Image 1 (cartoon, protein in one colour):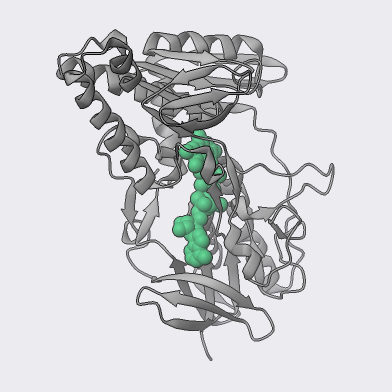
Image 2 (cartoon, protein in one colour; image 1 turned 180 degrees about the vertical axis):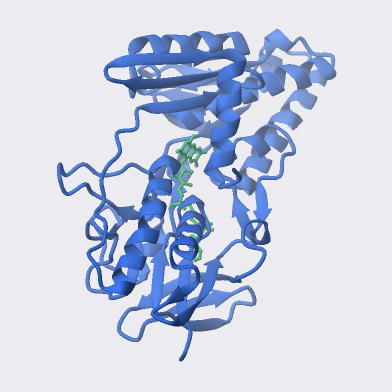
Length: 395
Ligand SMILES: Cc1cc2nc3c(=O)[nH]c(=O)nc-3n(C[C@H](O)[C@H](O)[C@H](O)COP(=O)(O)OP(=O)(O)OC[C@H]3O[C@@H](n4cnc5c(N)ncnc54)[C@H](O)[C@@H]3O)c2cc1C
């Protein structure tokens, strides 16, 4: 009998998780047929997206070769998927040479994730979107500090030693903390006064971390301040132009660099793939992650709109949620292959966050039965490192 081909599009946290879960639950066989697994991704390795700020700070490699996870039993194809033909059960992709190619599937998991939101081009600054943007950011602030060494005008020197980070979600908090510490270190090495470096974190809300209690926001702000980060609340960056950031309250901040960390949006490539989408651009799936009107096609992770049928609450775009979906998908696929009722999505209440604030600094907050648990300092940093590894399935 012919093999069944199971294709996973996207080797992010959700795609890697789905591949592992389906391999494990099926043990590579379904109804006496061997399952051939194919992972297709546009990148040459898995990008550790949650560590995107690291190459903006130092020379850290955040791409890991695919072979790390599945040394055998999985075929890797590097290509950009452009569409899914669910009638013919084929996907179409562009390979690394730019050629148009197609592969047939029996089972398909669409896990093409999200992209980092970009501001309009006329808003200036650099968005922390991918490892190339991160390297660009690193080169820019380092070049500014080198220029500051020779600068005799104190105001211009101060500007060169200042960065604004627009967007104070977890990514903006982690980016600003690590940048402030790295700038201080570099300034010292260059003979500059490290306390002349400034990182402004621009927060549109009235406090940090609205997901948790006020006390957590305060603790975060205190630790950030110790790193050299000044948080400006109730202020949005409107645009950066010629070294000046204009804020929503009319203030103007002279900066050497403006970095945007303004959240995630579903992968825009989905718009051309021929799958049913929500108005926001996420794939429409049922309570078992099956794509509507496309037999054998499932979708999970940031790219899918996954709703708990009991209460109508949708999952967020996080590794935590994507990982749980991936584990469940393994069981769903097995049940569907055997013609049994499949498990149904349930939103797991996950009031648990780890935030890194630079080497040996961090904050962990969790809530259970109405009680808050807060861990700070080195133990929180250890938790954060475990979470970063889990975010790339490295545990
Ligand atoms: C800076 C930053 C910090 C974050 N911090 C946290 C955190 O602390 N905790 C947390 O839980 N979440 C965090 N997140 C969110 C988390 O990264 C995402 O929820 C998670 O990566 C989603 O995984 P995914 O597999 O659905 O999608 P993605 O990680 O986006 O992976 C999608 C994969 O699909 C591939 N792909 C895309 N388009 C195509 C195509 N057309 N053809 C082929 N391949 C394609 C991509 O190359 C990629 O490998 C953070 C995100 C960012 C950007």
